[in-house]
Image (tube, rainbow, N blue to C red; front, side, top):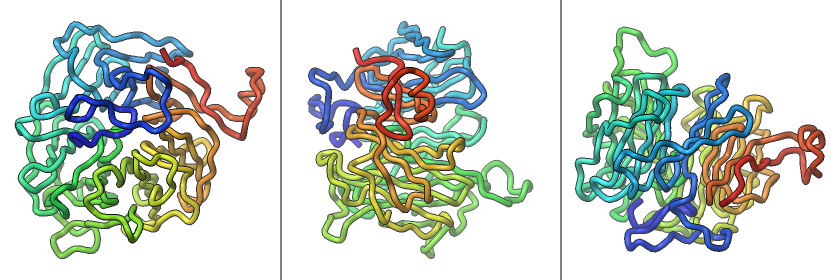
Length: 380
């Protein structure tokens, strides 16, 4: 969201740092990790930073800077997507042509510009893929509609989606480029193979004002609650809040099993408030505010398959839910921006890993609870 950046992840349109609530003294937003990507079964992790050129290759705790000779030193990278240790894409966020997509196929030794924002007034917020071929880029509204580009060949070509479901509900509405999780793409269970590559994906994204959009790319079909073939659901908002509130809304969405979902956010200018910070769904259609919310604003969420729980993080701490997002318990007080379990990334180049009470005791550390994030790369 241009001029409405998420906490700890960049500058606003005037060049001033967005308010991050609890921040380390002297933190530079351009040294903040705002994207985190880990592949289960592979011993590597990628971290997207607000300053270009960071890669964390984790075979234990080794972290390696990326080759920065690729003419992108002034870009603000918010999103990273990796398929393996050699192949990844990173996306920068900025006004107009400052929103760009780069790819590497040789483990960061070289980068190629794949796609640049064609909209002079546009601003990209998130990059997501499902599998190796289908992916989406979400951007702030241009001419009254959210921007959505789709690829069906793994990012080689991108097509603008012109769909009435993308129209804004409020003129000041936008998405958040906080942790690369304001957008999620899902395969549609039970879709016919004859439908082809363009008929088997749902797209969900969250916006300011607590609105959740859901649609199915061509052929457009009904997901929930709208004759237009899409869902516009206000799931993270208190009754007194305005839909045009530019600093509050849905910052991250995730699904488990295709239908069980969690959305988190809040107001990044009031990070200690837990009003409208978490919602859940058991069927992917009906959403409910959490019975016990997170301890404050949260910018990222992930399903922990090893524990059967949801984990959320933000600048004011982390929370866990073991009942599908209905209730949340705080467990860590660190300042984090992005999450790809078991790893977490945050300001000033911080990287951590989720460990259990037993692991902490084995490392001769006193646990404050059942879980915690152990810092692997300390703040600079």
